[in-house]
Each structure stands twice: as C-alpha cells, then as structure tokens.
Length: 462
Image 1 (spheres, rainbow, N blue to C red):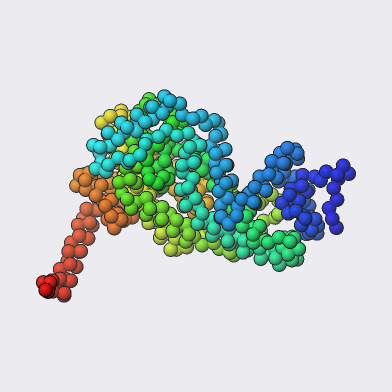
Image 2: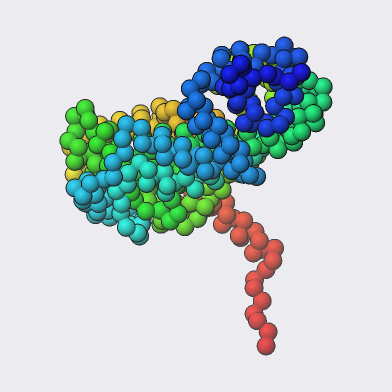
C-alpha cells in the first residue's frame, strides 16, 4: 500500500522528511514501518519534528548537506566546522577591539620577560595574538580532527556492520528491508554516523571556544607550531566577580599560556609524541558488537525519549581493553606532567609580581579538575578525559626536582622522552632523586659488565 497525501495534496512533515531522505524508496519504508507496528506520524510528533514549512525546509537542507558531504570521512567536518562557529557565537562574539589586542599582546610580552627568570626554555617564536572565539575554532579544529577521527572511524565501522546486517536480513523495517528500500544500508549508516559525529564534535568545539583562555589550557597541544594566544572575551568574563583586578588575571593567564607555548616549542619531540599517544589510545579502543546489538534491540523505536536516554547513558560507548587501560595510565601521566610543569613554572614567575597569584593558581587548579560540558563530550567521543587527574602530584614533583637541582635540572628532564618521570614518581615525588640515581648507577654497572665481556676496544687497523 502506498501512503496517500492529505486532501490538499501536501504531505505531512514526517512524510516530507522521509521522502527527502529516502526518495522513491519512501513508500516501501512507510508501508513496512506500519506493518511492523510503527506509526510514522506518532513517532514524528513524539520526536518534535517541526510542522512549520520554513523550519522543515531548513531541516531538509541540513539533512541533504550532511548526507551529501559526509563522503568517506568518519566525521562530517563541514558540519562540525559550521556548528562550531555557531556554538562559539552564542551570546555574541565580537572581534577583539584595538584596546583588547593591545592589552593582550602586552600581557603576553610581559609574561615572557617574567618567565625568563623561571625557566631555561626560550620563548616560542611567532606573533602573539588576541583571538575571537570563532578565530579560536578556525585555528584549533585541525587538532580536534586528529583526536576524534580514530574512535569515530572504529564506531562507525562497528555500527555499520551491525545495523546493515539487521536491515539486510530481518531488521526493524521487516524481512529483507535493506534490499527492498533500494539503498546500501552500510553506506547510509556510515553517512549518518559521520553526520552525528560532526554534530557532536562541532558542538563540543564551539562550547570550548566560549570557555578556554588560550590554545594550551585543555591539556593537549592544539597548534603546530605552538604560539601564545588569548581569547580576550573569555579572559574578561572569567575575571568578573573575582577579587583580583582584571589586569592581574590577564597577566596570570598570559603566564600560563606563554609557559605552555615555551614547553611545546622548546621540546621538539613533545608535541608529536603527545598527539600520537592520544591518537594511538583512541585507535586501540575496542567496540563490543554484542553490547551494541543488545543496546539496539533493547531500545523501543516508538519511544524517542528512551532512545535519547540510551544514547546519553553511554550504551553505545566504546569499551576499553586491559591494554588500553595501561595506555591510559601512561597518557594521563604525560598530561599531568605537562600541566604540572606549566602550573609550577607560571606560579614561580608570578610570585614576585602578582599579589593574587596563589589564589588564582588554586582557582585554576580546581577549574581544570572539575572540567565542563564540552570536555565531557570529548570524553565520550574519544574515550579520554582531557584533563590531568594528578596535576597537584606533578607540580609537586617538578618543585622537588627544582629544589634538589635547580631550574636547569628540572627543565633538562624534557631533553628526551626516556627521561620522563613515571606514575611511580607521581606517587612518591620525594623518592624521585634516589630512583633516578639508582637507574644511573645500574646503567653504569651494565656498561662495566659489557666492557669486561667484550674487552677493550681494538685499535683501528691500517
């Protein structure tokens, strides 16, 4: 039976939506949905599908674009980009004025002078900048691509294999529905998955753009090469209601931004190593097909509220293996070491100059520990919380190293990844020096044993 339009010849919004999405296959889809006990009109009403023709036209346009532009990418990046720009502009996003730019660049310049006395690492090269939230999105979105695409690809493949099998056999639309609809279920699911990830990434990136102060305060490097930049609107919003003057808050945040930029610029291996570690962790996340299948079968398609609860409750979340848990410990240790170093160095540089340095440091520590909605979204997408759980332990470790050997010894730890402290060092910062010395002595003993076995070097022959 073919669905009939109303007396005036205009199909209802839900039918327009299906026809826009499925084309000629919509008649069979509607018939099989009804045969399966699913009322399309009730489902559309419960899901809040708009009835206004203008709004529906916008929805159709967006659906067409999402499906057309997804291609083979696991994330629909055009949609992510546009949504991130829109989310970033909520509440207004004016371009920084001349005075805001001057104050921001001046604060970053002063911060570099103060940091010269607190670290041996040189300043990052490149022009210091004051960005709008939209400019922050444009500059950092490539980094989010590296972070989110691996897990998006894994989940898209798993969902496509599972749901395409159901549609091709005895899925929700009936026996052999995939073939009868004249569509490729795998391709459709991949495109829909790409669109959904694009919406999620865009929303999260746009929300972060309203929260961050610069390019380095989310725990991972977002620029290549690293250059210091601040978002004046966010800095000034954060300063409102604080006891410290806005100029002092700006300088303290500039110190943290400049310190992190020095670290990433002065330690050539760090940026690539940390980004690769995040990507490797994400790529290794396993998708449990049985969990996905159980989730799909347990959700009542006639109850959009139940479906939304299931999605937000994490029933489709990736499953981490024992190997990934070990990788997570290593990665969280690295993130803590980076932010702990920034925390310690910026605090040392601020102490002689900023009266509220101690209270501002503690406030930012708590802010990072608490996280926010955008960080929680990325935790769902990537399977990783981009905030260091052990910032205080790491800061204490760096302070201990500096006390024992000076700032030069502290900064020299970054000379090679093999020198990096471990989770054990975060557990016991006071024992770091003894463990390091024992490791050095063990290496020397090994060299002596090898020399005894191999004998002295033979002189070169003519």
